Amino acid sequence: MIPFSDEQKTLRAKTRRFVYDELMPLEVQTELAEGKLDDATRKRLSARVLELELNAISLPRAFGGRGFSWVEQTIVNEEMGKATNALGWLMWDPAIVLKYATPDQIARYVRPSCEGTRGDCYAITEPAHGSDASVMDTTATRDGDDWILNGEKWHLTSGDVADYAVVQAATDANIGDGNTLFFMDLNSAGIEIIDMPKYMHNLIVEHPRVRLNNVRVPHANVLGAIGRGLELSKEWFRHERVMIAARCCGAAARLIDEATDFAKTRVQFGEPIANYQAIQFMLADSLTELYAARLLTYDIAHASDEAKTEEEIKRVHAKSSMVKLLASEMAGRVADRAVQIFGGRGYMREFAAERFFRELRVERIWEGTSEIQRIIIANSLYKRGVEAHVGDF
Image (cartoon, rainbow, N blue to C red; front, side, top):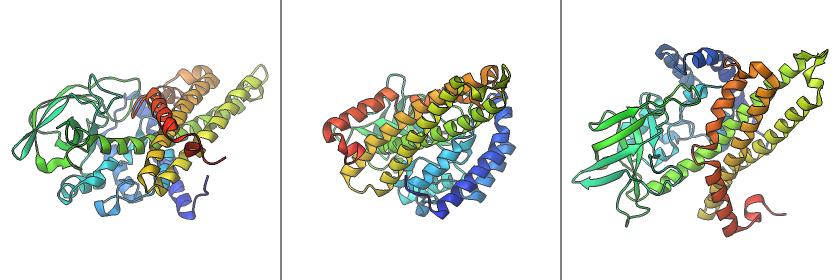
């Protein structure tokens, strides 16, 4: 792994202090409040994020973002991942596809999102379509200067705090990939919140399901171009998969730290359980797996910064699936071992091990299941061979 620069080390230290000193102390009360965070606290922390310049890190400065490199984004997300209940998401980062916005859209949506006065969510998943994002039952039909959207979208993460969504809908199958992205204001007529499902985790955001009934969206709200919806969503997936891997590494690092400290002080049968081989094996396996996942995460972040050609980007796309697969499954195993080491305490909601055990499970599902990642990896292997993915040997 390429060593961090002094500036990157400073960024990591700043983010880590914010996570440990200001977010982690809120974890238990947030968990016991079923993920609810009061408005005053949210506003206070949002002000701190702006003060620390940790908002909108993936978007260009010209759009109002911080313009961080992929490596720098990975550093921030790794530290974010150490906080449970998605408290790290208070360092909001609007979807990377917003960089394709027009000047008018930048003024109306992107810059306010970077400043924290507007909030976005991404609407892709549907009742009948999850893993296959190329097929949408939600349709967008042109009507003069507007588009009429109809359909149903599930799992709009942050949809309860967002005021607009980036919606992927089916358009003309003969144009591009047959899908188009739209900015859709969530206060538009015809949007119906079906429900706010309860999930295994208690995050500070909800994931509503919504129905679109003849929702009118102006043509000026087309994001990118007609027929580029799937193409842009794939770029969003690629970015999110690397950042998910980073957050999984952060979570695993915290779990290993806390399980190790506990094992050193927990005495059973006259000695610390850290002396028992069963505990040593769990910690050793966890540390080794984290090392491998973290190396791959930063390697792909660096490759993403360097990728310029279409072929390089395609290789990065496959590698982002590799790192998302490796890191998400690694973190799940580490969380399981941590619960076992903590014993009864590991089953208590007041302990991070229990919360991570539930929260990390979704990392193997959203932004593409582990099974989908394996298909992407295998197909890329068939096309490009081994060396294209793991380097010369």
